[in-house]
Length: 121
Image: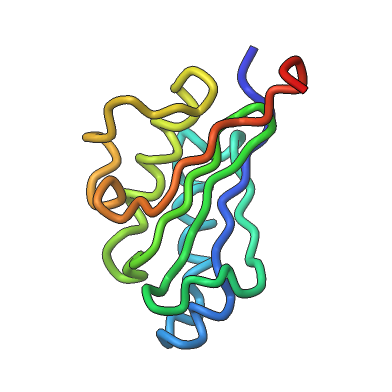
């Protein structure tokens, strides 16, 4: 059974500061054309507090690790975002061991946070 729906979170403040209006729509359109359309939703969120390196983007999902990226380039990184989503969903617990398929995003990773494990509480 595939993991539950995951989210692509994109910082609204970053898009405004970079003049990247329409970036959320570009990612959503690319996602809908991909084989990952049923696995993710794209959501614009308020400031992600990494204003020095816009555009900030995160991947998160129930029972999966959370990834935080910065320095995303609206005009260059959309396809690498989709490739990263594919790798993320195929990874055990969302823990990406080999990031080569993630393209430029592998160099823009700022943080990887393990999934919450309710059995360890």
